[in-house]
Image (cartoon, rainbow, N blue to C red; front, side):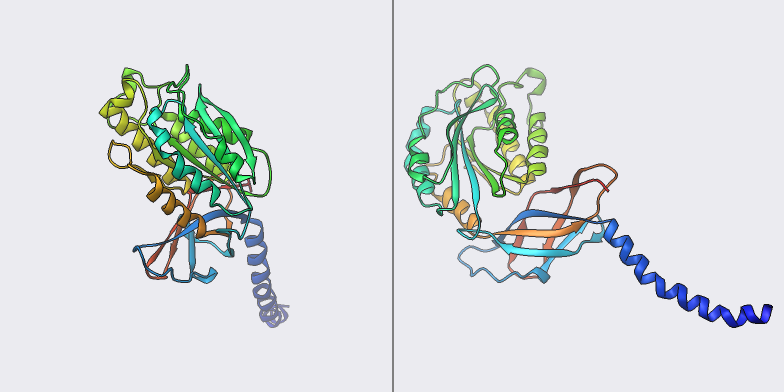
Length: 317
């Protein structure tokens, strides 16, 4: 009997080894979840030709694990539909009106498959002046002077959360341009003051944006009132704006603590980013609960960087 067992042992081992690839494949298929996120390919030097970045050039890591990239599709310009909301802070100084020519020109220059909405941040909500529309001239006409008042609950971060929660469901990508001083007047109490203080609603807005795949860009403009001219409040507001944009893969524009002479350079930079968007698809490792998972993007292509949100929403295992 022992001799028969020894003769059969190589056959048993061969059978076990043949099952290992199948088991590994089954484990991989059950422990990864397909996800997608918008990515901007950005040239590291101005006035340089944008190098080609292909799917095999994109590196995605979740922790130390490199993930499988399954899709890399250009969606910039007129290649794919986009929903873009322009949000203006009603606490902004009326001098913001001098920028309306550049802002309207930017809206009218967008591709026909970009839907544009216009809203005003006030009382912790968004008062929609124009719902998303492909009629760009109509959207441009909806822009008005701010009321120069924040209302009772003046927080641009609560306002943007309100908009994202009310956003109509569709398959288009979502992006927001917030024009504000970034000051959270609702929470600007003495205990929150100081250079290192950032409104807690920034993180809340960031989580909602990353969960819904919304990219948020911010443009600084001076606000009204005592807080709108206070160096500490302005600096905290700009830090909050920069943090929100960076976490969601967007851009933040400001020139010190002063208003820009023109928004045109900001909007031209934003337009270049819109033209170089890609839809990245990859297989992420889920947890026991659905939630945000941090990912890092890189490429070995010289002269470019890949900008995206810090995290992607992953369904539960």
